[in-house]
Length: 285
Image (cartoon, rainbow, N blue to C red; front, top):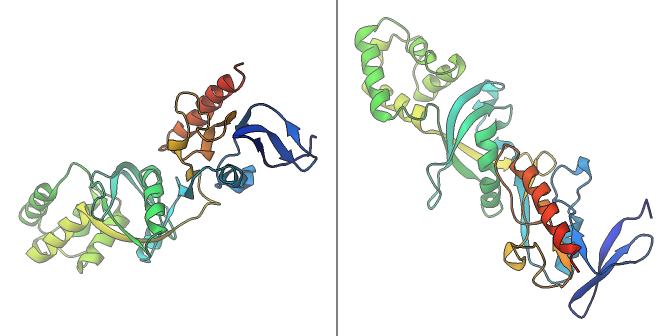
């Protein structure tokens, strides 16, 4: 049985009776389904458990990648590949989406963006991408520094050290490559003296610094995702025991369930805790 693979659940009269395997049936009065999600297939998780659960009547919330990098439609992130923003903020720029978004480090990549803040919002983006061609997001490069403060800084730079290049002023508050990008997007030369920056250009820089737009067309996919968003519907599982409400004797634990958390070890903690809880109840007489 060491090489056997589980292929399905054996049920009778609304109760689990064991599992089917490639080496034949294995009978048991209780089964804990801990097959994981569909992400990171290199670790052995293929999503087989979804089919097993669905076959006995469970609802499966469509699995999508979570904790995964995002691919942008725009090409400019490639110019900043490897550059990171410390404690930036990113949010989905659509109705009924919280503008608070997620705060943390943001990393620009050859294809888009990544980093803790982006990973934490990626599952929500993936769910939306399953319904639409792209998802607009916004990036606040310096959370806590609002439109008024940026406008005041730009005015001060123009009057105080107007001879100094606007790109140089911006570089004191963000990586120089990002400062250069903002200038280009605003349609001005980074080497332009701050005193010569027009009011229109200053307003554009302020908007970009606080709400830099980016269009996400895809994620980096399940093969690159750390976690799967989706799985067995939670309403069909007893939260006190993780027992199925549909099939007696069947329990779930870990990523097969429609539950995922942010970066920081929370998903590992869920796997350990849920496995412990389901195991305790599965062996109760």
